[in-house]
Amino acid sequence: MQKQKKQMIVLVILLILLILAYIGVHFYSKKQEEKENAKEEAEKIQVTDLEVSDITQFSYVLDGTTLSFTKNGTEWTYDGDQSVDIDESALETLLNKASAITASDEVTEYDDLADRYRKLAADGAGKLDKVSWNGEFYEQVLDNVNAYRYQYGKGCLSDQLLGQYMAFNAQLGYILPEEHVKKAVQSVFEYNFVEKAKKNVHAERAYILNDEKGLTPCTWPNGGKPIFPFVYYGEVWTGIEYEVAALLVRTDQVNEALTIVKALRDRQDGFKRNPFSENESGYYYTRAMASWAVYEALLGYHYDMRKQEQSFEPKLNEDHFDGFWCNGRQWGVVHQRKDNDGTLYQTTEVLYDAVKM
Image (cartoon, rainbow, N blue to C red; front, side):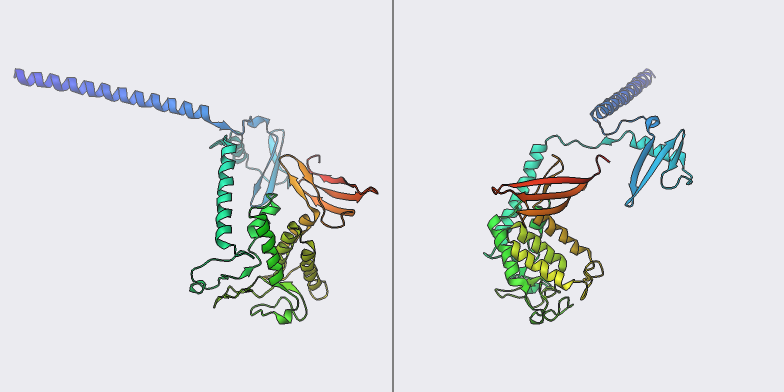
């Protein structure tokens, strides 16, 4: 009996100790959680910190459409139609969320990040140049080109410098060796520009006829044409013509660039074809908007929105040049003249300024 009593006492003591341990662990976990939450709160990067009551106007973009609202007294109205009933509670919820936005991360090591991307770009460009450059242009390297349909292999692809074209448009300069870029785009013009359509084989759609000129997507000047090459290789696409023309201008081959543009505009002259709709895979095909890149290249236009700087180096009529420019926030005209002593000078007019407006 005495022994059982002692065992009961021991069990009660153990139970009390377990309860105390549980309570201790519970409070410790809660304190740790509070400490972690406080730390997270302290480390939050506040993007917006506004009082909802101070907001009297706001707008947001939904599916490409900008919706704007204005607060009149205590009521909100939709600027597009003030008769529309507004769900005040939903609007307040949206404003509450927008007024206290925090960032999920903060990039502080800008230089390190930039160096990382520069290295990746340099490594990629170096490998591409080493593997694909054949001395005249960049080719597609495959162990057996005929093992796959719709490839081009050793062909001279007009679109082979698409990345370089985009880099020029983004003011990044040469991302491949300059001499290789110049030679490659020269080869594209030499091999792919067709003087007479009737001498050009195009098995698919005929976008040039009879004696018309144009630039085809691909040829095989050194042989090696696949059994099943990519379709449309013998056609003429205005978007690629403009792309190559822009590359020619960027590499100081202006006459060749203008040859392509003239051939294209002669086809789309308003009599034979619509000058405003290059009908390729449908009317008003957007690829032809690459024409703007030709204009910017001829304008020698460079701009940096971060530094709010822009400059012009016209490639045509340098002694007497007038041109239009647009940078997304402003547009206007630039004039370049040459003095009697041979000095070039420029004047720029801003005709519209969204910032000041």
